Image (spheres, rainbow, N blue to C red):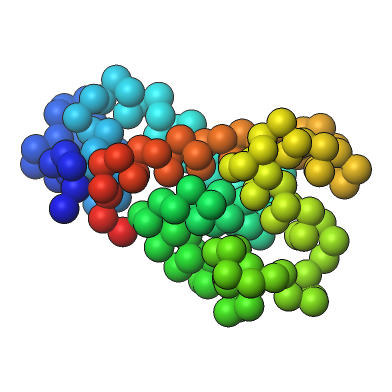
Length: 165
């Protein structure tokens, strides 16, 4: 059970209503609805960094799921394991992302580096960018660091509030 009431459309404040226009906005938005002024800023930021960008979605999912697993965020791990599987990640790949196995032999050098980056971001953030620098240009590095940091924030949010997956 969540640590706060997850507001449905009928209980959400007026300023939060636009986020319910397409239906159930999910547990993160339903928790943020308690503070619409934060919701109005946080959700567009989350959508922009987790949505379509110049970085390959597969690389982004490697970061999100590995960071979430390293932080032991039950909500994010369960949610993003389903997302990754839907993107075509196989069992060996999912085990690697969850920290339960090695990356499969078919992974590209860049995918391996991004996995190592995601782990480092959670354990030794001061070393993380150095892993990416030989492989990516600065805009992609900044984006992946922002994605990983946003994932860390959401891991803490979801874990503290015990959001249901």
